[in-house]
Length: 159
Image 1 (cartoon, rainbow, N blue to C red):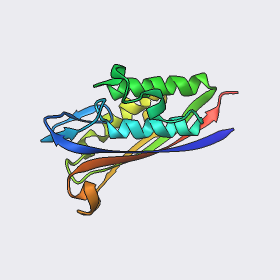
Image 2: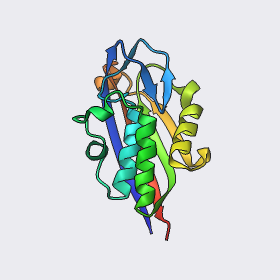
Image 3: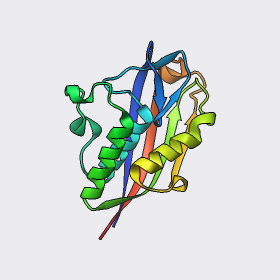
Image 4: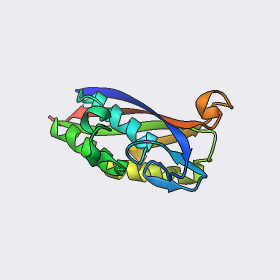
């Protein structure tokens, strides 16, 4: 049996925070605001995986009301999510993700992001796609107020 899942996340850009996307720290004047490290890309991947396996969402498993997750490394959240999916009898087949941001340009960091995601969910990097786009100046991402990410994943039964 095969299933698909989709995940979406958006965080506001603020001063005096590190910008982390796909587990990669990216030089930028602003970072993403959030309870954890606010890595929108990894959060979208987590939600896609959890959705595909019908295991709820990232907020259920790592609620921002729980101090254990304050400033959490989202790579740890993704590894924990992958373990939940595996324990439910699923294997990850692929991940396809898009980051929406006017700045910074993400092309120099995409391969590292792919490798991080692949390692966390225990697949090969060629099973992970990370793309970046802009909104041509439109909306909160276009105005530089935030960054969004969307992810789709495929999983299949281990049985």
